[in-house]
Image (cartoon, rainbow, N blue to C red; front, side, top):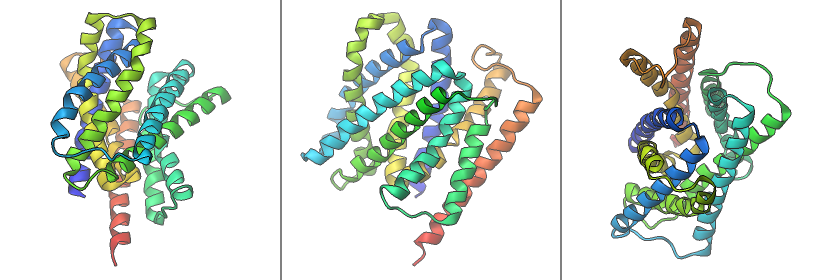
Amino acid sequence: MITGIASGLISAFLQSGSYVFSRWYINRHKSPFELLIFSQLAMGIFGVLTLPAVLVFTQFPLTPLFWGMELICVAAFMAGQFGFFQSLKLLEASRLSSLLGLKIIVLALICLTVMRQPLHLLQWLAIVLCAVGAVGMNFTGGPITLRACLFLAFTLVMYAICDILEAELIWRMPAGSPIVNSTAVAALTYLLLGITALPFLAKTGWNAAKCRDALPYAGSWYAAMILIYLCYSTLGPVYGNIIQASRGILSVLIGVWLLHLGFKDLEPRVDRKAWMRRFLMAIVMIVAMVLYSYARSLMEVP
């Protein structure tokens, strides 16, 4: 469990850093879509470089089920990205980022109804608190259109399916080091995602400078994904997402640090009321993590 929690927390830190790099790229080039394509291509190259190193110690199962799940995972991620960008047209970026915290509830419902994995009452309470904390961290309020709700729901379901399949893929790898297996699955997944991004170069065009500027985001995100895969395979996707939600707290701390350093273009100033809300929501998420861990320990007692 310690390995899963540690990897989840480090992954959350790296993800928070990747968000800073993504803001830097978008401020510079004004195109989230180009960032997606160039970063996916870069991570595909990372996958090509990573696989030979890890396949010395493990191997992928040569079964239709494993490769079918892998392809579904890639397809679900691409579908989720489509839903995300459609949602981004209808909702502010900071608001959408907070609403993605609702994925934890979607994950729990899928695990309960589809995978038949029961949850303790305290775990449900932790899930609700985690969702409230994640959404409340930056949520600005106000009505949301039905179209935006539908695209958001589609995005959440696709991302939740990815999380579940990622853990399943690692569990089906040969016995051995969890970090090797999680790295191998992450490398394979992002290699395939890099390949799927190639056709979109016809729309964006090749630009070496933009690809280079996408590397900081791609590198931090790729490392974060290797660790979150390890977290999911160790703790399960629901608990892993609760640990991962700490990125909201870390993002706030990084934001304070950036403001202190004078990087106002990377982290805009907000009023005292917003900072108080973020602080309270951070406490709520910490309580959720502790509560879920406690409930999990109760269920493990014979």
